[in-house]
Length: 492
Image (cartoon, rainbow, N blue to C red):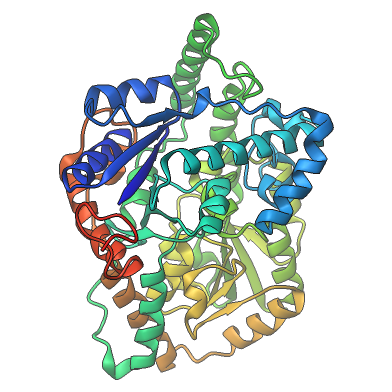
């Protein structure tokens, strides 16, 4: 097979190792390196493979502004997409859609004109087409999928995969669609539901997603920590400024420093006003964990709807008078929302803030319903036998009988009424738990340690070998009778 591996800023050593193992298995491996530094790393770690490599920053396909609209119409017709929709995936070009992170640092590209933004997107289409024309791959691999590469690959029938957290311990699966999930995982849920409760073994235990646990353990919200991180940010920005390596039209010089000092201030504000589960004993509640914004998981998994404030407004208006909404901030988002944002929430009569020292698991266990657009909370709620009101139409949990998908206000009211009326002892909750858990296990593989290699610059042969062992049967299912060492798609 011909395999093209995209390598950018994360998990560089892991993906170089994966490329080496695939080449040793007889496949034709090429790399798309983000910049000259990544290219130099590939040459150092895999010199035998560096001859088949493109540096994406070196690609240029200038498009005059006078031709942008005609070219945009052509691309939209060819691929059946809307470029404005694709713009919304980008935290810079789509900054205007990010309504719930009002203090997120400005990005220069956000202020470009419509024509300039469309021009940039069209240049990315030209790059994706150039890479697929140059290497003619049967398979694309990356740490996460690029939405434009995905459009081009899908149109050409090229598989595009990345490792994605299965939301259980240290297990991952190979995602084969743009919504960071897996066909095998979704099919597993459907098959398990068809088997019924008696046909599924009990859930033996549920481990918190290792990536979330690892990242959250590093967080501190003290003024001392803010000063240290601000000093480091000043040093990094100054070094980039002096060396001339600052990216044009990106974050402003020292743009992240105010955020670092807002974090402890907003954290203390929520400490003062936050409520604990015991404070609301006897009340029916809807738990709403806010999302990290801007984040690829939210923008990619639910591109159609990602406005948390609108979700809260719909639930508030649809909730019976005895129901309270408990809104909990995502730990990494302290500082990207202004104090005014929380004050606006608290002016809604049935909204309270969760105390930041309480955990999501405490709220899920004690609440009546959990509402989420994307993220781990929906999965965790199912595992704890709780109903879920889902606003992300591509969430895997939407397949379960204890989850309702809300697409508009009427759907919110109907879904919330149905979930509030469910008997907590209903067998549907245990069926949902078992069906989801067994699908997670069967579709995933253990990749303990992967979350610790994000910035790694060394080979990760052991991790890559485990990931490759799980990838091979996925490729055999994609190319039945055609996949094997050294075989290309269509080979005998």
